[in-house]
Image (cartoon, rainbow, N blue to C red; front, top):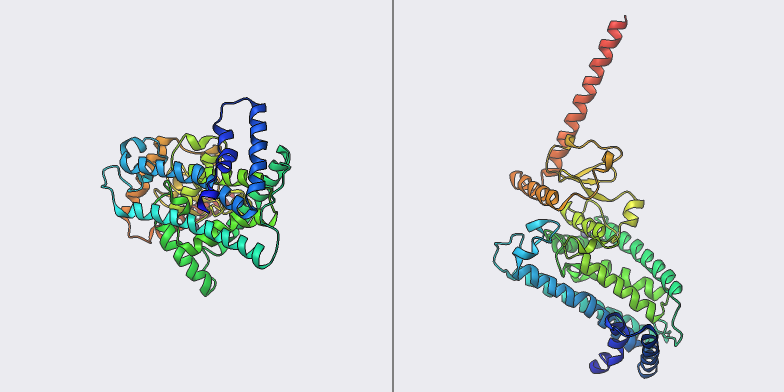
Length: 387
Ligand SMILES: [Zn+2]
């Protein structure tokens, strides 16, 4: 079965058109020939699973493993590309020895990916064999037009954003009942034990929060809307590339499109201790004002104005409705990011763990109180001088 899943048509359909250097008309004829062979020689189940496996392998597993090994074995070269400097390396320092922990994270990440595929296969088998329903993805000879692919893609990406946001915020970080408390405990002790995202950590978590918070938001919208298999393959390619690039921790490459912003938002979700940035692309965080931004002075600031991560006195940067005037919240340079991360690491090492937020809040309240007292004195003087 494995050999039929990895049969030539999968590779030819999903990978060759991207790397081939033939003419457009030849590519089109070649594509339709391969597509016809594929849909008449394999079942919908095999094609869906085979395409997922092929796309995940070429656009997530291979590049993520290369980035991961580059980080582990050539940290001095990798650190120059990291947005968070040495802090973004798997071992947090380029002088650290290779540890088992990093390989354990990588192993769990790959195991989770396989468990996600197994879940997808189980859903498909139950759906087609037990409930006698149609296959999850639409398998038709007619290939959708580019604008149809674009519209379907937009809809499933929005649905994935909404689902991922709601699950991440209200299940993976919720203490409301026993079940969510347990899931939240797993997510916080596994995924949030990472100091920063690095290659292969996109799929690192306890298997339960991973399946609920990462796999379900990706496959449910595609299954409900019964995407055409070609659209589904494009969707999985977009998701795989997004995960590979935004969890790499590298600068430059993710700056294409808006991936740089997505990568920094993912980093801030971890660095701020889950103070915000629950959605993958930030649309829902922007709508519900739960975004966390790294300020130029190393603070993590929520959109409601709450400072989530202290590094220096909050009074350094004035804010208006949680935003710093004159665009100070825009992404700092690589050097300033490295300096602020080092500054925040130094600050963290000086205070008792767990008290940072309290101390920061106390400083803010004292400063507010002092300003109010000054205003009252000034008003009193003005009233007395008028009399
Ligand atoms: Zn989280």
